[in-house]
Image (cartoon, rainbow, N blue to C red; front, side, top):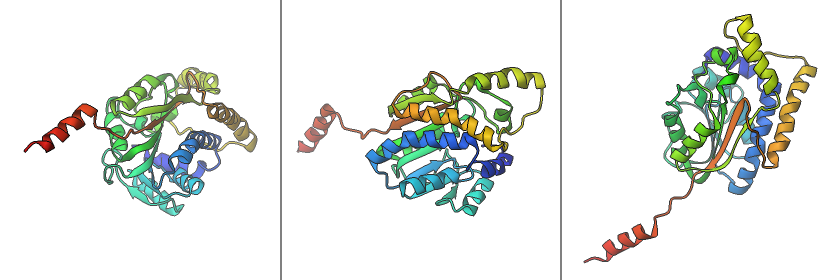
Length: 268
């Protein structure tokens, strides 16, 4: 669960602040080919925060979206901004039947679970995903980029490509894309989080703060360039965020098992 005090900060900033804009464009760059191919009839955003991205999903794809969050304040913000179908529920016990959605999106939710406990919410996302449907996960990546902001929002862990790949395979998903992002700004992030913040010894605080239009544009530019790079099908070797795109296969009965079932039916 995220620090409830951060919800209001997100609601004020996520439409225009450089990080939200850039990550939204990267997310859509990964989602657009899937939507064109799978044509989902129903989308779930699990852990929707203040609801802006759920609304953007609905507007971009003209598809019904269900926005779910555990936090009551988040759901209130969703209703205020008329995010589609806001539901207060836990990601570890989603109130939906098996195989309900053709597309499931979850952004920066898994890092709020203690290490090892991310398996249950991941499996729950797969449970409500239809066969041949797609899952998009974004997660805070690499402990070296843990910051005062990470502590403030109650981030419990940061994931690696190896661990997210292991999760996908344990749930029998076919991995389509697995890449880091927010790569170009990592030198500045390392200096800030590993040098300046330890020296400053300030308490945990939100990293979401308004900036001038010029700085906002300059910080957005690296993420815009990364979006173009990712659209080519290439990825990044490290970064502050990690994206997984995976497909749930349609289970097929092996031939030997099918013949055994047929044989039993043929018996008198």
